[in-house]
Image 1 (cartoon, one colour):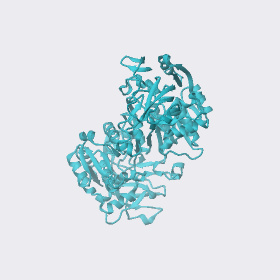
Image 2 (spheres, chains in turn blue, purple; image 1 turned 90 degrees about the vertical axis):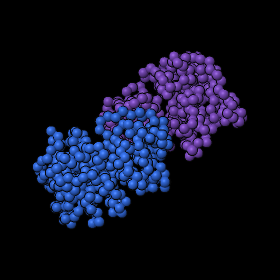
Image 3 (tube, chains in turn yellow, blue; image 1 turned 135 degrees about the horizontal axis):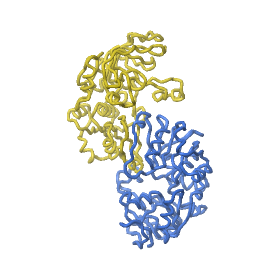
Image 4 (cartoon, helix red, strand yellow; image 1 turned 45 degrees about the vertical axis):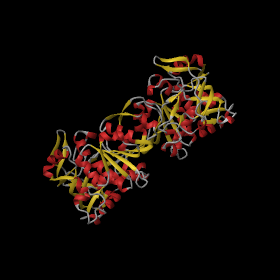
Length: 320
Length: 320
């Protein structure tokens, strides 16, 4: 199986073993299209001590499903956390947080930047025929942007909210908050990315101008930087909610006093519900194709990673 | 008016001006007994650039109340945030977070380590006759321990919870969580303080043992240290709540990744409801006298501050 792989000497093209289907709950999926996420680039730099095939965004076709033949031939997307389904966490209904879980292309499970992958049947969602691969491949990152709502966040119609960061995460988060009824302002650094936010229905501003903005009840931190978190805290109204979406590498220096003094609630938020994301894509509510910079064949996977790291670039796709 | 004061050269005994009662909403209170809080010691070291009379814990007697004569002669405790009552935050019902507020002995308002203080009538709570001054003086810090419940925290009966820190804040927080039905374990460093936690109905352990404890849904961070916060994060179950009670001075170095990965909710929590605290004291549900190390007359106020800073000391009181 051809794949991009994080080895001891960094990223490389490699021939890796075919995923093992000895567990009857697992299915084999041929990857049709995969996305490169910032997390993949972090993994490449040593985040979580990762070794193996990275990538967790994909759309594919089921090619083997020993215990569920009806899935064979279907076009699918897949949730990335593969839970044990037997521990107390799983039985409590929060399988996404199973302490024994593997995570596609992140933890103990080979990822999507390869010709084939395996996932448990329970993780699959069929892709409606109306969605192209180029749209369906955004299901996973878009689902993450719906997670704050799954965690209970609600808006009054037209209520102001801020998103810090104009990367993929910030743009998708801003769009979803807009769909939830908020009057969203995105603060970022890139005119081109802010133009997408504006096209998607948000107000926009440069990060430098965030300091003079009045406070809002809900602020989403999507920069992944300590500076972004400090700005987010300063923009969150007392008793407000700060959504923490970015995964931060290493230690950050934070002034914690405002969290206590202003009784701010910080809501860590990770993977989200696929059905909400698929519905929004079917309804053409998120113009995800605006985010695609380029698609590379798998054999140019290393070039794809280089491209994804360039300033101003949003989403780079890999087609095996 | 005799007072302890933070001046340019540090803490000093001083003669300060009598509080100004030109605002008819204000009353004059003779301080009967005041507590020294860790925040006072932070103020003395320059926290918030404070100058003036520190202290926000007190029980006193109203001696002047031009617009509310019925209060004169009554024994009172008082909430510490003096709000403007006219801004949008106040009108939204969160006067404790009024951006124009003064705060007793902390921000723009002379504090309780003096013979006299002034507060708005709205801030006063009458002290039931059954409560001694030595008990009533704990109303403010005990109220803060009830704040997480006012913010919506609830427990199943017997549900495990952790408190990190065996200082005054930690002990009061542990007791209140116990009263709310939780099975509380306090992790601390002082055998004597942990003995109080145990007497008050909690399990106890040394901080070094916290690493091997299993995770709980609710963890209260009451150490005020970055190390305490890191331990608290490691003890909080995925989708759990970390109550942040301590005010932190300066920047802390924090690994933010677990907040996002485990979708932890961090609940900043400050001043709390006085009625709940008074009820608990009247019902003898919190043996606050266990916390008192010594009471000093106001003229020995500097000695009182020195004593309060000693290792192992919990509460030092000042009697003007």
